[in-house]
Image (cartoon, rainbow, N blue to C red; front, side, top):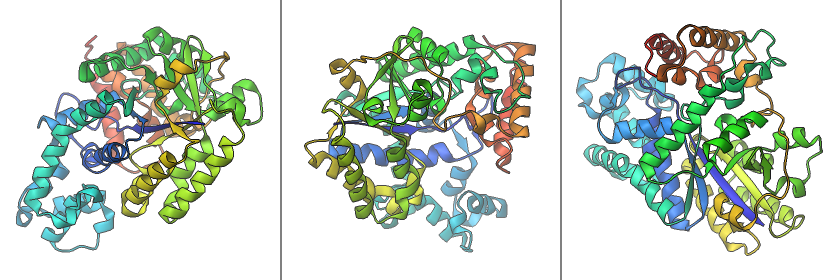
Length: 440
């Protein structure tokens, strides 16, 4: 049985419009702690897999690597500890609450700084100056590191629509009216096409190759979205098994799940929800060896039920789960890749490589949905509906612009009504206001 591991790397735009002010620190944090760690583990294990890169994340990594990003959190880690203001100390504790009880400014600064790095780098053994220098090296070398493993064919790199919008809802928001009847009219397939085309062009600019595949934001797909993906030139996309069972009107069946399908001119892989979610949401509660053994038992049981050419897709967030694991997930991930590679019946593969040998044999008419099945997470709260209303009014008033494209990202709708963090509302509002200035 083939294994298609896909790790999704995503952060929305944290930069205020027409500035280099980053009001949240998470691109910087994940780049030095989690993105580098995943690349290092994959390289050490020589384990073929896929990393999905959202273009607006890549764009922000470049801002940090080239010294353009202005990040108040990082600035407070660079300056002498005795010059930190009470407001700066409180901000560090707000974003890193595990250090809330630390009262000494130098100790707090050093603890947060060390937390920006993978345990692989042994940050506790390094001085503050060594860590500041290491951070620069990681950031400037990160995109070349992706490129290196891509060129070695260890990695397949896929993309997401540029600012992480929900493609089916840009095409026709009425597809979510079952969850929220109050949603406004919004039908802009041309916006969805822009996000796909721009993502493809940006990827080619960064990596000097065109991407073959797409993880659509939140796994959100529809028949029309697949058609757009195919027309943009992508060979395959990926989503969750929920959409397969809804589309086939069939109970779960591994023989049906572990194969690619053809839809509107593109191939689709469907993720094994249980296996993906065990890594993403459950195994952090287990000792690493016990978790890996359990995962291997599940894989072996599945492999015994399907043909040798079957492909099991394990697709999940590649950055956020590790904070809940012991040792930032390092022990679990290393052991997982080692044990999988040791099993002759399990063959890690890149999806593009698999399709060259096993193209889809079955076509599919796709029912709209997301990795969570429905669109409820992005529409099912009055504040989320209000956010769509604001976007629809602005789109009707000013037309499309790159500012409005940022406001079309899914993250603002995910968090609306669910977080007290003011930054998400500020970013959404700022880009909507800026879209008054057209820049087609």
